[in-house]
Image (tube, rainbow, N blue to C red):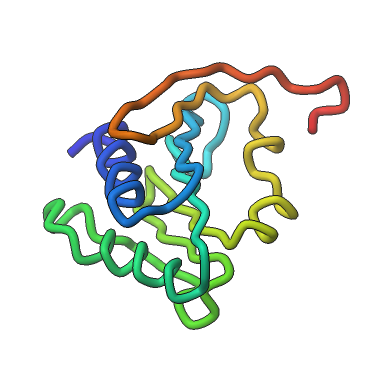
Length: 129
């Protein structure tokens, strides 16, 4: 599975688990960290772990198992590293504090909701945030 298809699949998995504000950032050409970030908001630490567990348990193929994970014990910020795709599942206040969407303001992005995807391109503010 290519990285874009994996990012879309993981974003839809988060949406199906009722994650809020599911956004995919296309970082190809912007970052050496990953091709895509999938960012989602959970309503509670239990919800964050349930979203992550669902993603980890999906039968996306052997190559699509996360290479590394962080935050499953705490649940405030869960990170699933699929190498080319990195999933960030935040509680709302933690997501706002770290502001990954602001940090990668120039990156193309799409939001997932109501079974639809909508693409947007943001503009970085003059100070880069």
